[in-house]
Amino acid sequence: MSCTTSTPVPHVPCHVPAPPTKEELEYVDLAIVDLSKAATPEGRAQLATQVRDAMRDIGFLVVINHGYTQEQRDRIFDIADYTITHVSDEDKLKYEAKVLETGSYQGYKPPQFWHIDNGVLDRIEQYNINRNVTLREHPELLRPLLPEISEFGKHNHFNVCHLILRLLALGLELPEETFINLFNYDACGESSVTFMKYFSRSEEDEGKAKNVWFKGHTDLGGITILWSQPVSALQILLPDGKWRWVKHIDNSLVINVGDALEFLSGGYYRATIHRVVQPPLDQRGFTRLGVSYFSMPDDNVKLVPLTESPVLQREGVQRRFSDEESPIMEQWRKGRIVAYGKSELKKAEGNVEEEYIHGGLVKHYN
Figure 1: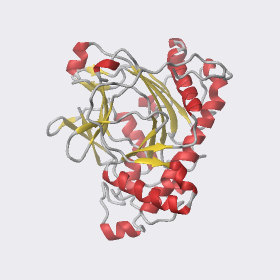
Figure 2: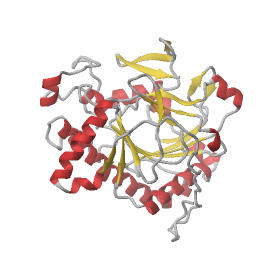
Figure 3: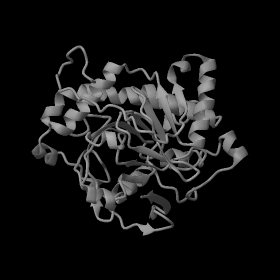
């Protein structure tokens, strides 16, 4: 049970998570980064090497000792479930995200919005809340919870994302603040707290979509922080061409690099393809509840490689665009958001589909 022993105010119903799967799955071996080690110079140097290698080789890692207690973690999952299941459909329509008109996910995204494969649409409901929770209005039921959601966003940004960005800068032999200066908290953009709930599909649709719930993709931003939850469904495409599962570790974070940070690092850090698939057999009676923080560079940041890095000067730069043609963050995020699950994709080799966003090749995997 995730229920806390105390009764937080305001009260929301307790979200009871699924038990972890007992099936034998082929898990990816991810680095486990203990953020408590950052308190000493020696620990910081060790973490910088560990984070650099993980984000270069795989593009994903796991974080523990991030400053949130188990009770605090459980509370935010209670709030996430409440946001999806207790707000009325009428209110959700009032606060629906105008994705195609604005290039933004802020608000509710209803199920059956994205095309997955062979005519099958997604079964994912989500609510995106800009880290500046006052930027737009929210359903009345959620307004008493906004201070907690705001503090949760701040914790993700300052206590986790900032530290990872510092370590990634050190990995490029750049000043610690290099990336942080591009990820200003007060710059609204699209950085957000996101609550997602995945609902089951018919067996017919599972077959048509090859059991894929969210097709293989890279994230579009800087750093994604996914709060681990027990329903196994997340898979990573490794360099050997195989998909492997991400193992749940309670009160841990799964962190990955997105497109923007790959561009800024000249390809040194990897925006890795990942997907969500139908859970193992012993978890199929449960819905999958996701809690994430998506951080992005400021909208006016031009996504060109930081060629002043001594590492990039030694090892070379991989460019997706010429410097002149590189988009700013606002252009890239809006282009990716509007196109995802809506655009006509070109079939490539195997199960790969392709499209171009601002002249940059984007691949999707079914």
